[in-house]
Length: 154
Image: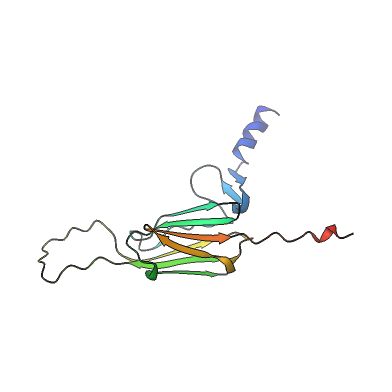
């Protein structure tokens, strides 16, 4: 293999993409994935929208969102037309009515959030499971079982 061919192989192709399992084609440079896994820019209130990690396992996808202080009851997850939607709200703790608060300093952000993630083909939406623990929402999206090969019939 020539040096040019080796460099092209290592780069993926001229646009900087390479094959990457269930995620399909992903950009090899930078941090922005390409289709079919579509992680659009954060939607909703930019200061409230949780960070999201998406990883592929042997059995499916795992999505983890940082949601400290958000109870499970305040989170809704919906899957429709290949898009997983996570919505919810983070509210500030109330202050005691007897306390006198003159100049509150708020560095933490509160409000509604909304994330939409286009999932790749081959996932089983009927078996999606979500759990909240230690301020992290974890969503497990299993892959569909492989179908038997019909060409093997003899």
